Length: 321
Image (cartoon, rainbow, N blue to C red; front, top):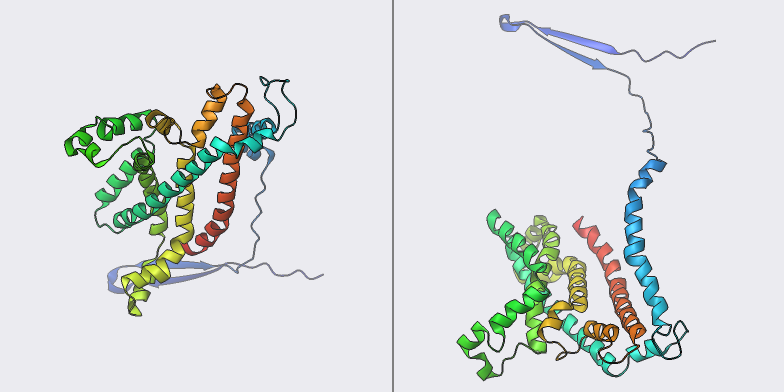
């Protein structure tokens, strides 16, 4: 019986004694062998780390979503005739009359503010990315992170004290003589832009960092102007990211409540305000499940927007990765 020879390491030694100094170099070569790397298998203990995340998702998102769906199609417990009975009246009422007006107004406000913030935030982010001063980039991004989370009652108070009917800037520039009022659709739009523009800067900056310098150089080598570069190269690549930022801004404006409630009240009809009125019974008693139907309408709007965004985001990732 003949056995195959085992690969034996071969050692090559070379000695250099020139110049009175000795140095030796040894190289060891071994016949290469192909070994498969063992596949890592996730053990039972590895999955335990994801349990808190799943529990948080189920408790924080799953159970409320189920409660909203069930409540939207059942009668309220404090309604006449008892509660828990299947009905379509809540969903039907949520898209009629004043509630329909509030939904349309919320959609218009969210779309307008998201569009303006996208158009304004993109050049600001581009200026930050192309700046040669690292401190400027750091300062703008830090300020954007703070301002993007500055909302609610403090933001409403700041604008009322500044641009309200008795605000400092209003009195200084006599804005009321020109028909200015903060407590309107236009005023609420300006207030929302205060935190939506910084949020857009934070959202689109990573996408702008992903634009390769070679693309711009190739466009310039082919005698393309800056406008042509942005029209035919940069914007098509950034379009999914811009739409993603638009969706994020739209959702933030659509779900905002405290700022609008503290500043304009019922002057500008909003669906978030209608939900609060239905829950508290400010309009009619026994309309708690109508608020859940309005919440279901908001969820449907968010799902439809995300359904458009996700395929575009996958396309953008192929270019910017």
